Image (cartoon, rainbow, N blue to C red; front, top):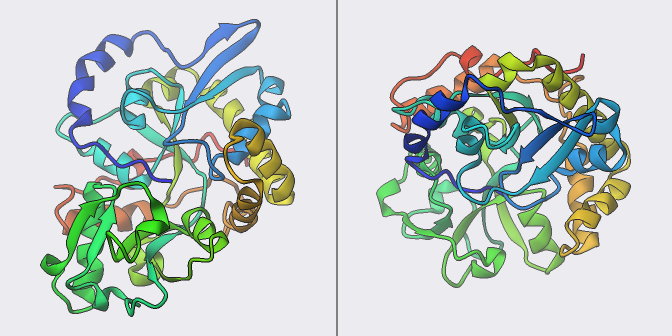
Amino acid sequence: MKNGWKKGAAVMMAAAVAMSMGAAAGAKESGGLKKVTVILDYVPNTNHTGMYVALDKGYYEEEGLDVEIIEPTDGATATLVAQQKGTFGISYQEDVTIALTAEDPLPVKAVAAVIQHNTSGFVSLADSGIESPADFEGKTYAGWGGPGEAAVLEACMTQAGVDFSKLNMVISDGSGFEALGKSCDLMWFFEGWDSVIAEMNGCELNYMECRELDERLDYYTPVIIASDAVLESDPEMVSAFLRATEKGYADTIADPDAAAEILSSHAPDYDIEMLKMSQEYLAGKFMEDTEVWGMMKDEVWDNYSSFLQEYGVIEEALPASECYTNEFLPQ
């Protein structure tokens, strides 16, 4: 479910942003409705269902918005949003933090947390004997190559008293759980998606939850982002979008099976039973430990920024207020 950060993506966008900041490209009129584009982080999945529910039930139209949800096709989502090629985007706290601390910072900000806690972790086959980071030495890990990825592995192994340099890291071939025990020993799975697929296929796993390994790894993934230009030029539209989106996620929480059916109509290649299992799991995660959908906290941003700085992913941690805002959430 995670589309890896492409290092250096920020470099190409500075001139484009400078040219476009004067003309707000967030929302344009379309048949009396404001045209809004949402760029996903990857292919449609159960993280995104609330938006598809809001789209199908007319919640966006009720707010005066004509919303189109698309997949990223020609660059990282944060870069595309910063370049005004999309009104909103689905990203991750990791990517937002790195984008904001790049040599040419991207003018983006998180406006809502889709899920309140990190629902990912490391997995190995149940009979592999790999049950914690203490067992990672000499093993092969297949991942997506993000800069924060190595930092997380290094931190977990160091805290377990083993040598990170003895972990072999390769790029995943995309085969998912089927690669375990063959081309690799370890992978990073999202519990509500990858682990569900593995379970449905009879693959038993050891699951090592990130937030249990280091509390600083309980970061927001995914988040909804927008450019500074959009937030400044059309705050009412941003609030309207999040009001409708919140209603879609409320419906998803209340009836995950029905929500999965709606997602299936937009992503028909997925097995519907897998979608329902995934949606049932995530229904309890979208508003875990919060009474307001989308709400974010300073300490979550600060803790993860401190972690990234400690392991050399970023040079300097930014104040949380520069990374996100709750001001547009319905409360």
